[in-house]
Length: 258
Length: 258
Image (cartoon, rainbow over all chains, first blue to last red; front, side, top):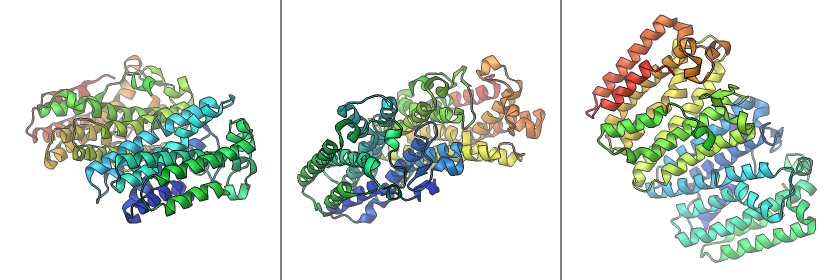
């Protein structure tokens, strides 16, 4: 559990949560535990995704994947442990009222579960080797990566006591951000720098995976990336909070090289 | 998810939860959702335990194991989905207040997580092929199976609004019951009927697993079984509730043939 958590990564989900808190002028400290819990869920999903039965990856974040170091059985259990412990952390928060904790658990378990991330992973696997339409691809990614990104922003809003309308708008913001994030991922898999990425370039093509560039071509994929970044900002600006940090994350996602 | 949930089994955890509710004169209906959630967690753990990287079992409850039917990747995801969804169910309970739901999630996630069931599974794997003392064996089973059995009883008490002292006593009751359950399991693996069990007899010995009969001998193992069933009843009788159903479960566990 510790090995994969400490293996680094962009920490984009914790950043989104903390940046949302900041938008509401709340202290970062308020969000540390939930941010960690969400990063633990993300990390568990990577450990299980990397398993031989799934994507069979040897490298993640530039380091040997969990099962390469600890064996498959321990990797499965490390993932199970991280997922379960994340809900223990949220339910044990000391300075948050029970209603808020339940709202967090409800949203996060939905985003991570069969109707969210796990469902997206199933759809992704079922789509492997088949030609997908851009709508199908977007549907997969919406759940596989988008839902957990979106709930990171929502969790920050829930912790800040935001209204349901604001939580909804910030969810739409994060949904577009999530699609943009995935398009950028696909683009980097074609044109990225292996060292900066910490994983082999071209693995999607090798695995016969449908990607935005493979379906739309590189130019249209870049256009679509720009479109969703714009839509993200539009939704963000509808919520009257300090947008500074969240806007910086939007820019970062558009410009990142790993 | 549905295949393994519907594959049958003893439903001992839901029974314990509902019998505890009944002890407090609460309606069974109050506990259905949490009982299902706990059974989902138990089922996820069986799906992952049966994987080739873990126990590599082809049969469970007399049916082909999940990965034998759906493949390893889907089995991993089915387990992940069941675990995550269980917390969604509990956090979404309509007629239970937020404080109670948080208490349930806190207790269940602890019992199922790295300090509970997952930790026990890790210890079990690390102990395979090594000679274990009876204390080590008990420590493993205490977490691997005991914690989730105990939290089933505790969840019934929490839903009934029991005092912390009562929850504690019922936890001790369930702890002894859990040890007894495991000793009986080990005994049945030696002397059981393959058809009644739905799995091959003698698989522990084949896997070179330490069991109560292998460490203590069959007679002492049976004595120890009787001891823990008695201790379970002693703790139970200290709580002033209707003991009828819980006592029946104690008898059932002592006498079961599968």
